[in-house]
Amino acid sequence: MSLQPQGEPGTRGWAGRVVDRWRSSLRLRVSTTTVLVGVAALVLLGAVVTVTIRDGLFEARRDEILADATARTRSAQQSFDAAIANTGPQVQELAYNLVAGSRAGGSGVVGSMLLRSPDESAQVLINEAVLPERLLDGAVLTEEMRTAVAGGGQHWQSISLPLGTGGGPGIIVGSEVTLPVVGTHELYTVYTLGPEEDTLTLVIQVLGAGAVVLLIFLGAMTWFIAQRVLGPVRQAARTAERLADGLLDERLDVRGHDELATLGRTFNEMAESLQDQIERMAELSRLQQRFVSDVSHELRTPLTTIRMASEVLHASREDFDPAARRSAELLQTQLDRFEQMLADLLEISRFDAGAALLDVEERDLQDVVAHAVELAAPLAERTGSSITVTGPGRPCTADIDPRRVDRIVRNLLVNAIEHGEGRPIEIAVGVNEVAVAVVVRDHGTGMTPEAASRVFDRFWRADPARARTTGGTGLGLSISMEDARLHGGTLEAWGRPEEGAAFRLTLPRRAGLVISSAPLPLHPGEVATEPVADDAGPTSVPDLENLGGR
Image (cartoon, rainbow, N blue to C red; front, side, top):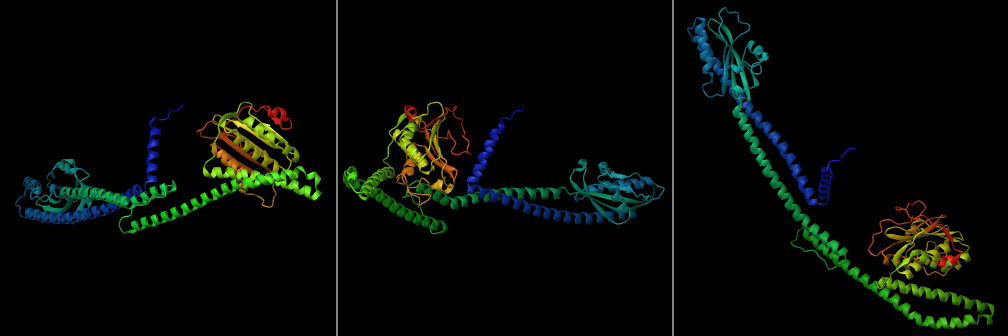
């Protein structure tokens, strides 16, 4: 078994916070991008400047060294030519004196070597003069250098000085000289480039310090400019949020006459226009709601009078001729529908005015469903639809308003009967830890996904030419949706042409509970996220005596 490092979750959390901060802050992105671009530009510029200065220092110092080496070689040759030494020891002393005095003069010489030429055939030999002896290191004097010097002329090579000679870069210059008695020897002079290296290091340090100061200044200026530019944008965003929350009097503070000030004035003008239009629409909505409420109330009195007259006519319809009797029956039917429409309009006006209240009590949703099924049974029998109710086999209690929930279930059931084409209707009741649900499914004409998204709109019909055979008002599903929202629940619709339709009502078991998953699937392709209890088996509606007695 592998163990995950304890610090990893914290690292992921820290990285996540950094990413969230990066995504949410335009000022941070602008400042960081500017600094990174500045770093890249300064690195490129520093590299170019450093290489240019290095090459310039090297070439200037090389020319000085070659000129100095030429002068030293000429002086050494003149000294050898003027010397009266004619024995090996005398020449040896002359060679040592030359090498020992090579570091005098402050020209950056760190050592010198006088070596016998490989091609010299003189019989008299002297010891090679090397000062300091570390210069005999193969990294200082290479075979390629000796071969080049043996070919004649002055030659030089860049080297790395041994630690005993101060270390660092250097240049070795060699040429041939002729000594008395002993013949041709190679004179090598070693120069240090330490001062030039120190100068280059100082230049790099100055450039680095200047780059750091410049980057800090660039970052601060970018942050400041971004703050100045994005500050009004953030203020506009906060003001827009307040406007969206309904605080229509919020405005931006406008200062100056630049582009940001123009943006602020334009934003304020837009906010004023929106406020004016929203207030006009709100006033129109209030007038409309008041009109619907007043008309509904005012129609009550004449409707009552018409109802009384209609009942008298309906009671005496047997004494009328067939045409008058049919008219009395139609009048009675349409008055029932008219009264239902007035009741629905009054209920809608209460929802619009925010005056709808819940009369909550703890009830078993299965009892409410049974009552709704019992009321809808006569209509189902007339259309030939059978109703099957499936329960979870345990109580489905919740804090609900029984009257409103009964109205929701009855509306869904009547809608299923009307569109079920006489086919079976299935009702399922479910429960989980936080919610109860009821699904009403028919196998009738069905509806398209577009129709399912609009089925709760007021007075909306998927087929405008279709008659309402059961006297519906077109407001039932809209009122059902409002009743579900009033409980803090949801009402959803699903349908497919020729496959039927399904409606799912989901309600929280207690006020304030968040419904994270529904106890029942809405359609056959959906799987309930939480299992429900074992099914107790279907209950057929024709046996209404047992069902209603739950």
